[in-house]
Length: 129
Image (tube, rainbow, N blue to C red; front, side):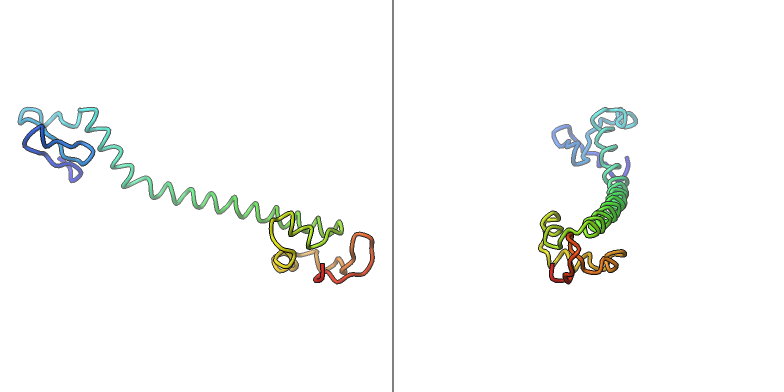
């Protein structure tokens, strides 16, 4: 028996999910061939050895998708500003305030070169929009 399983002396004490297995003296060698015991042991092994690393892999994958989405969002903000959209409109589209939008994205490359012109080409301080 492995550390995962404990052999109990009677069928009444058996609790397979808890790892307490009853096996008569003649059945001890074959206990791992029982479907319920094999399934429990496999599930427990997966939980203890695979679930954590798999979850960490999912975190790394999600972080990559978040980074890609952030780059896409930044490019969209640059495009919106280049098209003359206000920080208020950008903030509204992003679900944040104009101030937060400005603080977050005003430093993006290419935005400083817009010269603070609105979509009509009139001078306006970008920070005030």
